[in-house]
Length: 66
Image (tube, rainbow, N blue to C red; front, side):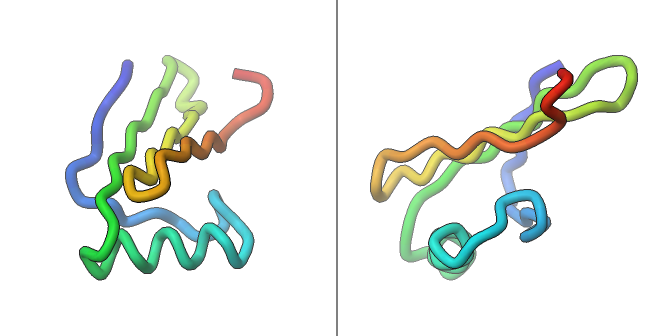
C-alpha cells in the first residue's frame, strides 16, 4: 500500500548524511516544498520515497529485500 504522509517527519537514520539533513531541515522549516510517500507490504517492510521539490530530487530508502 502506498501512503502519502502530509506532515514530513522523517527518521534521520532512514535518510542519513549531511546533504539530506539540510534537505529535511529546509522542508521542516517551510523553505523547500517536499512530499513523502511510504510503501509497505504485508510483512511490515517499507520503502520511503522523499521528493525534494525545491531541487527536483528523489531520495529512496528502505528494506533492500522488498
